[in-house]
Length: 184
Image (cartoon, rainbow, N blue to C red; front, side):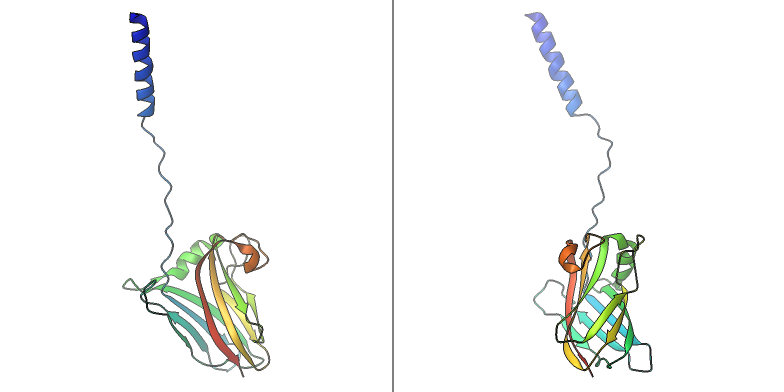
């Protein structure tokens, strides 16, 4: 009987020791979602037309105030524009440039451009991740015939790459903004 008690105590001690062992694995750092308050899209013409700025500012984030969306002018028919997207977190001072983080994590991000059926324009990626897949912080926009509609910019986090567009990309939407634009 004494042997059974001794063996039982030995088993309990061994289990206690094993369950309390020091775990040297360092926890994985969680990459928190970026806070994006402002998206500015600058469309610089390749000719002498006027530069167009599209901007969405939502300084209270998920608060009750709607974003303020501005478009500085109309696109010119037949004009090609070099586009650049800048994302900011203006809840910090000075404002944090989230575009840098998106570029640093290019394999985990992709911008998608959606043009409504009424707008005659096309886009083409000019920035890519290290594997040659689209990133989209810069692009080319070509304005077609006089028309109007919406131009939507969507940033996806961890999309499937390569993909056939936003429908097959998956991932989580970091920001989505639609701008009402016209081509004259």
